Amino acid sequence: MKSDFIKRFFKSFQKKGVSPKGEDTGQTREEDSLNVEKHEAAAEANTTKTTENERAESVDVDTARIEPVQKAQEEKPQTLPNQALICIGEYPAKILAKGQLSNAIDAFRPIFIGKSSEGLIRFGKDALDTEKIAYLDANVDTQFWYQVSPYLAENQELFEKIRGKLEGNKYGVLTVSSLWEGIGSATSPILVSKLKEWNLNTVTLALSPSRLQPSAAHFNAFSSIGMCLAKETATVILLGRDQLNKYAGVDRTGAVIKGNMVLNSLIELMLAKTTFVNELSEISRSFNVKIFTILAATGASLRIYGSLENILDTTLFRPLQSTELISASVLYVLVRLPRDLREKLTRDRIELAVADWFKEKAILKSVYVTEPLYVEDANDRVDLLLFLGGANVKDA
Image (cartoon, rainbow, N blue to C red; front, side, top):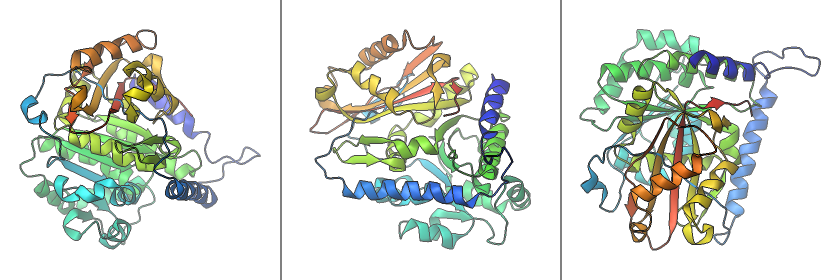
């Protein structure tokens, strides 16, 4: 399955960086990068013009039915636990520092890795300080992963600093990394190995490049994913930059979510589920599935949609990575809903609804619905994240 995935992933890169005459345009198509940035800037501008009365369909899909770890603790009103979050690269740092997670940074003690502390603090807009940052020497060339890897091998101080910040961690580490950047593509696979040495589970949210980005970006991403897959303990969730930019939905308050800011909502929900990293890592090892993709619904009103099945249907309208659903073999489901819906949407009922919904869509070896997160909300909004394991990734 690994070799087939790599062939399909590499095939998508062959379509990048080609001129109308069929000639390779090289590894630095700056105009393409500018197009991506303009597209994202336009999406952010549209978000600011949206009123609170606007409502967009959305769904967060959670997957799993694993042993109810610390069930009693999760029955309480949810707050972000002191879990470990490692953010690699300027792109995700910029998103997280200006989203809703910026208000809870002290609660989950993130670690931001970048080329320089000044650059990360500038992107963080006062949400970050040097205590939350681990950075490389500013003189290191970071265009390609192979330029960064030798520096990381020779300078273990960076990883010792990270290890010190993870002291006492028992929930595992959630890592988010932009794989088209030299730093992200080089650091991600090395960090997987380091965390194994430190006896910590890890899940990597791997952000793949836009189709408009230059071939160098796709080379970095392809190389990094290949190196991660070679690690025995790797659990990788692929998120496409193009798909993130196209996302439209609402959060639990009804506020509109557009574009890549949905990354805040996804990470916040994963952090809220204390056992998420350990559970998904265990599933990955048990079924030898290393690549996952996400179908999501955020802030979906049960009254408006009418049923959980209808909410599940909406997840297909905006996948966060183009995937052949029929090829999926494992499913992990994460759900958050108001406490008032606890009797109506029990864990068993959610599992049954999800299993029935997938009957004609994929032949799954296993469906795990983890214990739902119940929150004190005066609404009927459901957040749902479906983590599909083993599915073929499409070029789209």
